[in-house]
Image 1 (spheres, helix red, strand yellow):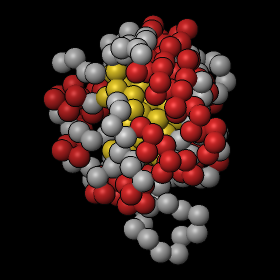
Image 2 (cartoon, protein in one colour):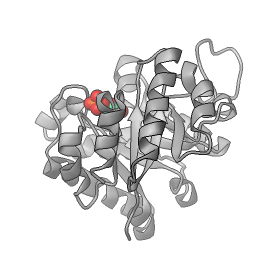
Image 3 (cartoon, protein in one colour):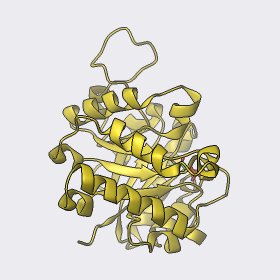
Length: 252
Ligand code: 13P
């Protein structure tokens, strides 16, 4: 099966409203003049979503958020619900990213609740997994990935899985300029695809999009995206400039 590649930009905590509008307008203009062979998602900060949705509506740029909480509403100061994200035009939501895992203590159990809630609300999760440098050096990468996938996808049905993108982001490669080698990434992607086959089915494994994230740039995108089990990229730093984000898309 040939899977269409998906390139997503995680803006992280960058760009106020004015900067966001400028970047997305530039991206929209430049993309209209290119033919790229992939799906494109951008995940700006919450405060820019409403305005950006108005700019990307009707284009091929899809909108996602960077996190959400699993409750519907109530006394959860500082949190954002799935329905709030839907109401400002989000189709996707990044869940399980290593920054909320490591900085804010998000657990596999919490991430699983968020994934279940996103699915029931009709949002498409971009579910991130990845090992730290210490875990890689201890040779427990596969164990860590397996635990994150099994726990994160607990009680997720095969039908629901069709709505999920998995992003493999080795923590040691995020924001460090130290990209995983195409073979290192491919090994973990193949491992994840096999896990999906065991837990769900061969058809589910064949269908699922598994993105790579961690220091992806135009210079290394083509080789990474050329690997058999790498179906796209989740891009941090390099998505903050329209030219480099598009440069990555051209690697598809
Ligand atoms: P960088 O591309 O800046 O390494 O970030 C990757 C990432 O965390 C995307 O979610």
